[in-house]
Image 1 (cartoon, rainbow, N blue to C red):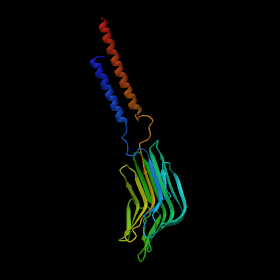
Image 2: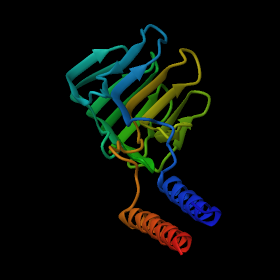
Image 3: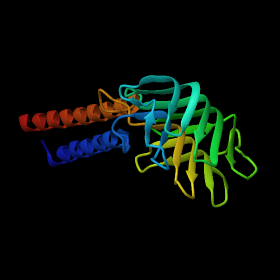
Image 4: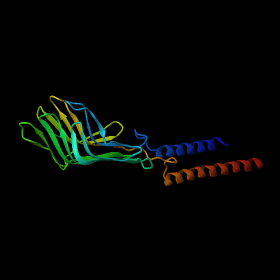
Length: 249
């Protein structure tokens, strides 16, 4: 093989390698989709023990968890609590939801909350996640003070409260370094006395690169790479044949 032919083939290989590298997508922080959901949780405060996330669903394996009625810690309801998660590694998607129709929250001897139509959702793809946390109605009641009405269908991270007593964040949303979105429909923090920290309706999800059986390369890029390699081979063979003919003469 002549020096010029070697240079031609080396250049073709470099271009092909560049095409393959350009066709490989950047890796996301998560290696597989994930999702979690629950309807209620609370820290220990006052006379109440902590309440772990209930009912809790996680992907994988995913699925729906339900609880009919609940009287535990500060929570009381006869409604059905439902949490659901799902995911698909093939396309890198995940989803989560948490719902309860009615819920009462006892925040101490002089403070309580009433919530209706709680619904938190989260949907993720490899390019990002979106979600929403809503209530259809709600209120916070403090002894000796007017009731605080909670906004229905609030915008993300809407903060209400009674100064020095309680804050309520509606449709609370945050995204971590891995691109995982957490949505809390209602997040209640008592600022005095018992220090309650209560979450009602959490949905969390994050997408990941799709599972690929072969390297990701478009048909157009593949065809171009094959054509370039073929052209390089033809040029090399022609030049080799010419050299052999010259030597024969």
